Length: 258
Image 1: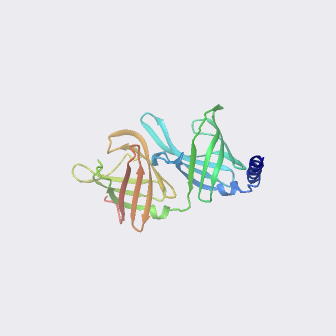
Image 2: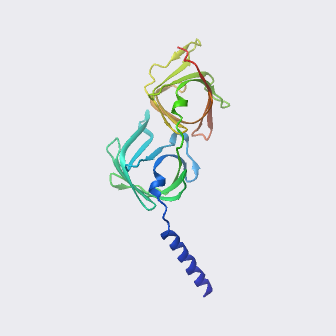
Image 3: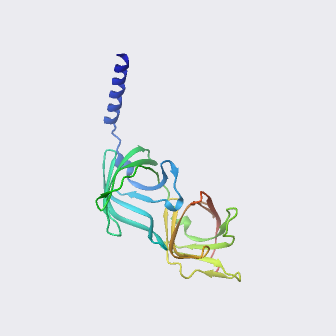
């Protein structure tokens, strides 16, 4: 009898706790978030994506998209709307390929600077795709745009790397950039077919480009890096498919080589 009474009291307290949850999730959610973990496992840096929940109930979304076997690119979109009902986030919209999306996401944990959600419903063109995973996000709180603009000179410092040379990266305020490498004669060359641009979300940088000079691949591509800037020094780190963290170290210099 006592056990039944204790169980009833615990159940009552849990129900009351749920009913008394007066957290303003809509207010906490407003802002820009970067996905960092899936099922509590760190995501590969290239698999990171960005969500921004705006006060006008528009959801901005940015992620890498595979266009075909040889081409992929980083894209931004603000064609989604959202609403918040208690712990539920309901998202609707149409992507760049004219596919319609309907998502129902439940917030299971939230602080001012991080939150975790689970997918309750995920529909594309009215077809449901079950997704049992949990997704954790970190809030973007800093803007490094002014510090990032400029010319940087450096190299990969990961042991055993195939990229043994030095490079220049020249970043402009309009989101474009130039890349410089040394040819077989050690002459500096500005990559002429660099059809791309860069995007910053806090300390996450996504960069589009054409062709990969190191691997010899062709087509459109993108990379994501987490970066840290200390004065005139910057470090990039990226968790890649083999589980290895690749690191580049560079310094800001007065001008590009050409």
